Image (tube, rainbow, N blue to C red; front, side, top):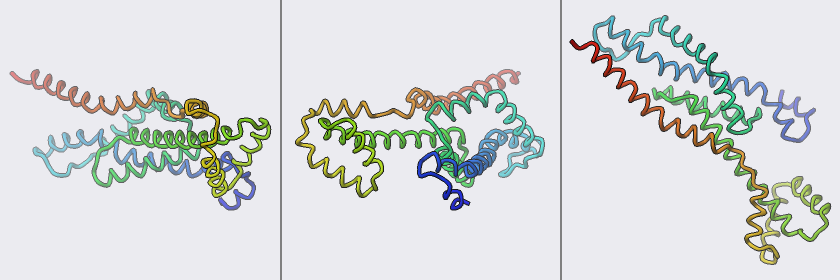
Length: 252
């Protein structure tokens, strides 16, 4: 299928991106499976243990999970998705970094594999936090690659600063179309001539900044990092307070 589709495609990112429609659907389904294997268990696990302790009169190593507990978990996830899901989907899907089909496939597949492995090992993890981590990984790699490419273009412009602008653009197009080996040769030649450049170090630094693009929104990074750090201790304190209050009401 890929071979037949590639014959009709142009040699660019947009064409390759169209090949990832079906893989993205499959990876999203796999991530949903991983979410059900871990996050739902985190939610209904305590309820199942409490239910088993009440009916068996003790604490067992393995607690049976009745169908009604599974339905409570499924109903809760459905209601939560309907009420608060759209806002979170918008934040994760578009506000952290720009995701196309290829990048989204990498994010979903990486998060699914991580969560499934954790589930197999019996580790309770957050599939949402795992997916967000995968998005940051893709975003920071994009930023690094973009910066590296901008740095190369800046070096080419730097060594052709007195050349006609049209010729410079032609040189840049030739560089973009060149093979990896040819690009390495061009950059090697530029590096050898770097000492003869008339631009100062400060000017070169400002030129690199002009071409550098920040592709990951730092505000969301700090917000999500704070959420990771705050939510676990906060939920622990809240649960301890609620338990303390319940004990206070139950004591004579």
